[in-house]
Image (cartoon, rainbow, N blue to C red; front, side):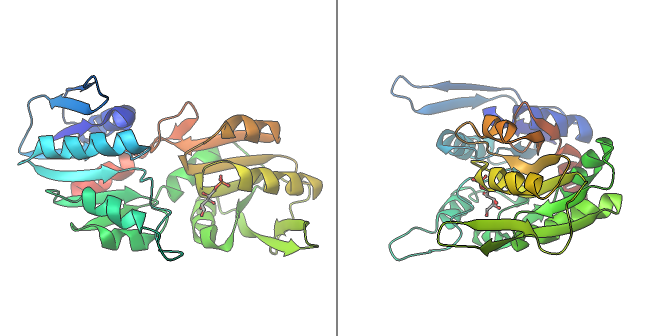
Amino acid sequence: MKVICTERSQVLGARLARVLKVPVVNVAFSRFPDGEHYLVAGALDDETVIVGSVVDNDALVQLMLLIDACKPSRIRLVIPYMAYARQDKQFKQGEPLSARVVAKALSQGVSEIFTINIHDPSVLEHFSAPAQNLSLAQDTGAYIKTLGLDNPLILSPDDGALAFAEQVASVGGWEFDHLDKTRLSGVEVRMAPKTVSVASRPVVIVDDIISTGGTIVTAAGMLYQQGATDVYAACVHGVLAGGAYAKLTAAGIRDVICSDTIERACSRISAAERIAGAIRKH
Ligand code: R5P
């Protein structure tokens, strides 16, 4: 077995190879003068684990090319972050089901697929190879433990992410809750934990994705008003679009924590062990 990765998943790919104790395949990535992607993979094995987060359109094309270059090896494809997964329904007429388009494009010639905290598990049905979703909730909880916070509340921004918050909280036996929105007027919305008080305690807001950071910035302001001592933000996928990290810092978020599904300076949690565990079972 060998591990091979796209440019945007080099660190996670190398970490995974180290955990699995297998070599990494060298790949020469380049572009044609018109901008088209091109790559040449080094010597392959009969079994290949491809690691490629779809962080943008270039990463998607590069991953598709890499999959083709790895044939006819038995390919296990790890998609740590999959852009377009949030368009998992045709919300209105005329829209594409983008998650299905990407899932189908990445399934060709692949024997198994692994995703990590995919936005909605229904996306897995669109792959034409067996697909499994892994969760970094325990790993996120383990990292939060190292912060040594006194009696933290683990909070999800909405009830959809409550199960994730519960799994994170179970690591430290902490309280968990989700934010609830109450409309006070046409323009004013109050956000507060559904049942638990934040007064005089630290809060860690946990979510699958931080994209623009807008959800967490709004929540943090209200949590401080309600007496929270410190507000932290932890997510699996740090998309951090449009200056989100600075926006979160300016809003008083003490620390922004994410995993290496998207490789960032604030990637403090690695998905490598979790992926290796799943691959060893298959
Ligand atoms: C939404 O469904 C996701 O779980 C996140 O809550 C969302 O992507 C966060 O977006 P933003 O950081 O732009 O508020």
